[in-house]
Length: 82
Image (cartoon, rainbow, N blue to C red):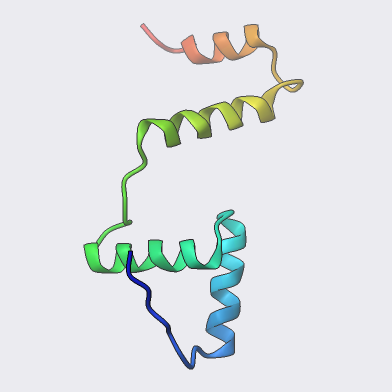
């Protein structure tokens, strides 16, 4: 992999990048690479793969434990479906 050194980044931009990386639970480098990929691809960068989607679903379910029972979650999934 190649490396790039970016010099003279304004302090306010550096701070915003760091805040965004923290919110997205990424390193500053990972955040910058993802933003560059999105900029050159004209989209959002890479598409989430199945592992990303599964991890997000499991994390969401874990947050709901104690709030909703497995029975309530199952009922919510099937409500309104034919």
